[in-house]
Length: 174
Image (cartoon, rainbow, N blue to C red):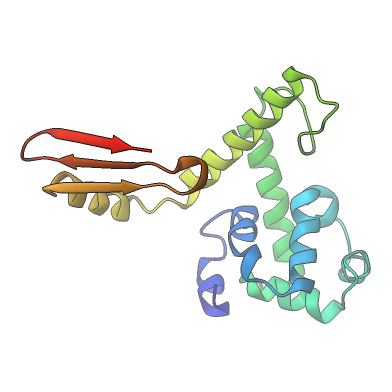
């Protein structure tokens, strides 16, 4: 995401969602900063610029550049928005069992279900926050007015479906 686009977007969408979205495009030093925020948002928001740089094995300049890349002029603004996002995510997941970390070989089946539920709940909430409903409406209109729709998947979703709206017939293959 270009710096200007990130700046225009600051505050429009939750900062943790934006961090996850732009992470692949960041420099390695900025990725380490994003990773620290995503692993422990509340704890990281309490760090000074120097502490953040030290924990991420980078410079204070990289920390400031990371903040600006997300559209913030000051680290303080980023911290405030991260803390607000933590509150939002806490509210979004309040009804789910308390679990943390990635799925581990020692997890019980209940732990695995709870971790997957938490990840999916946050993912759906993140998607809802950034979804452009006008684009979605245009896509729905384009699909419903099409005479034929081909749907492709990759990897575990590798399937193909063809629907011919004039005949109402559909076919699929794996």
